[in-house]
Amino acid sequence: MREFMNLTKALADENRVRALLALRQGELCVCQITELFGLAPSTISKHLSILFQAGLVESRKDGRWIYYQLPAKNAPAVVREALEWIEKALAGNPCVLDDNTRLKTILKQDPAELCKRQCKK
Image 1 (tube, one colour):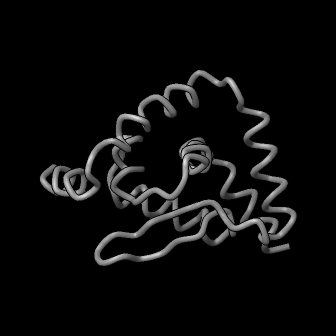
Image 2 (tube, rainbow, N blue to C red):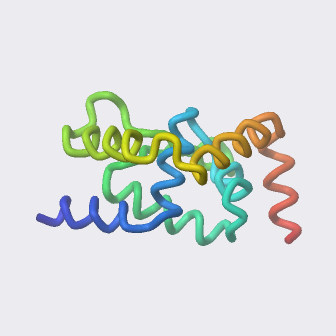
């Protein structure tokens, strides 16, 4: 029951769902996700922590950066099915399409520069 509740809690927030959809593009560092949503790094980290606890994302640390990605294909069926459902349900959503466009621009930028800029705010 706890796993189910973690999963539903994780999916009950628009920013967390948007983060999952952004991760379809591939692995992203926290600073890239922060840039996409314009939220405080601590807020993004909390959202990603909830997604991680639910098994909806995986993470790795590289130096001072933490990178997130969607789980591998051997993730539990309920996680894979939830991710497929989100993608199908929100295909063509204007907010998601806008995020995809903005993410393409963000991915062209150096993550180190994004992080420096965010630390100055």
